[in-house]
Image (cartoon, rainbow, N blue to C red; front, side, top):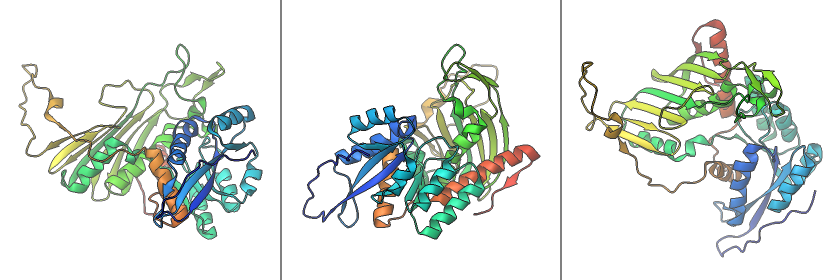
Length: 394
């Protein structure tokens, strides 16, 4: 690997030392690492790193790992970073402390196991693995070796969901009564218009499937905002069975591209979830979360959140003989921006780096990732048996 260029930084009197932390980024040239994780880490480097509780300055040093040497070299040169196509050699480097995986889900269990066996702290994109059994095996291995571990749970830090959390924490909604979550948009099949998602998302062999891809998000959003999931029933469907891949070749879709689910949270709260890559938008955002409570209701998207208190709840009359004149959307108040927004991927990295370097708590260890796999498997089992499936605590 080429020498790593470290961003110069001069500590203040209260910052006793610099900790340069090498992070192996697997799948570095892929969309998720290239457009989300690496920009977050590079911004942190440019600003002089992360200040730890004891005053140490932690500066992340990404090392790019992938299969395409030409792409990696160009990417690394543009960022002033080192790179490698040899995973075994990179994992053997004692200076690399953290392994991060943003490659396709298929093979993630094997890659993460190799990293743990090499003594690296491990941070993984969701879903943690393909199965609950594998996720629990990673958890046990990390515990056995005393290594820090975590899974990406980025959506809660988005402005809209952050404001929803503030409303819930403040008690503005009162007791949560019902929840509705809607997500998705139309993904073109590639025939007349190029698809917006890679073909592996629609193939089981590549770790594809809408439930495996998106339900980890719904799991931590619901459990960290409201309450643990107790049971689920789910109806998945493959609505667009044939697609065109990146090379222009047709292929059959062997995973679901739509799923409707009903969940019950601890305390009996019912949740309605509609998730689809085969729907056309007529709502506020690609993701909307609507919570009705005893003292008010709120609906949020990725960036905005709107609230209607009990005191401001209108009393509409039912009259089918006349078209309605009022606009129900206008009867909600926009929740203002109070806190400064921190990029959700950067926040996750700040929390994990601090967890590794200083032992501060991390909200999403491997066991939280395993919980998502438990929900995913329960959804599929529910569909197979046409029954409700319980989710006991792990």
